[in-house]
Image (cartoon, rainbow, N blue to C red):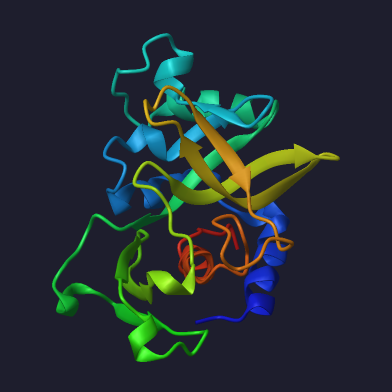
Length: 216
């Protein structure tokens, strides 16, 4: 697993988003399959961090549309306003595959607890377009996972005439009535679901870094 410093290094490297091929990254991300509809992998952001799908902007949030010229035209216009969010990784506690189907299995043990203090083993499946990993951690470690209706990706917007990218979690309420993106922070402890120090987030950051398509 990468260190806290390496996770921040990757975030800093990607912050300058001028060399991210947004179209190719969206199309690659959509091959991961965890969101179902391809158009849901990139959404427009409005003030306050709430996101809207392209079908929703066109007036029918339940309509399925292809990643065509109209789709990318709306995504491009959204970049000029409050930005876009691209979903690039997923953490699921409700998915499990045979061990041989995972690219890597990681067992986390940071607090060096005694065996009689460990009772409940959590297993998370981490998914990107490039690989699938299993993360195993005892609940007593206090590491927060993500909900099944959440995913991790990049906020991309324009600041001072330059494209900027930031890691974030896209979350929703139980009714899935609206989605909101919440940026990661290095000030949070590792137990927090939005922390750069959270081992699940560090694994996803490392995986996502290899999924992003660059222009050069």
